Amino acid sequence: MDYQGLVFDQKVREVTRGIYSQIQSWPKNVFAQDIARQLLRASTSVGANIAEGHGRHIGVEYIHYLHIAQGSANEVDHWLHTALDCKIGSPEILNELIRVNYKVRKMLATSIGTLRKRYSDKLIRESLAPYSLSPSPLDPELPDLFKEDNL
Image 1 (cartoon, helix red, strand yellow):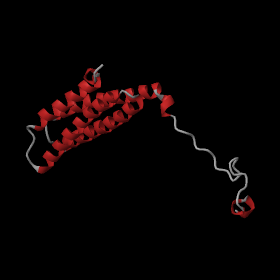
Image 2 (tube, rainbow, N blue to C red):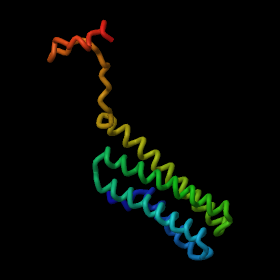
Image 3 (cartoon, rainbow, N blue to C red):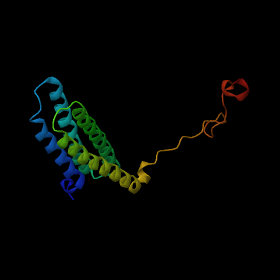
Image 4 (cartoon, rainbow, N blue to C red):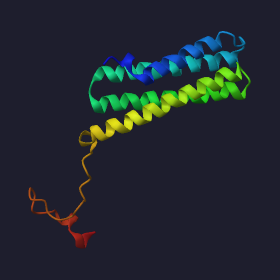
């Protein structure tokens, strides 16, 4: 399946189109335009990371890119709320974009969880070995400096 067939990719594109449409009518002051740039950058980052991760076709790498997409989706949420708080744009449209973006965030979290279960054997990290002052089988004699009674 191509990444474009993924429901969360379709929803991300819906959010990005909605943001683009919405910001066309925003004031041309520096503050509103900065929020607009951040929204476009973050929303397109979500989709780009879904596409790039899906293209890797390797579970652990895909999870990594979905985490990045999730972070960008959280950033989109922040900027949409900022625009809403600062009364920039239509509250109805911004709230709808927040709602759709929330679905994206939820789908990304679910996908990450599912993939983690599927690839859990590849995600296990080597456990830390306890440190010991006992002689190693490779070096049976410790220098006197490292003997327990000298510590």
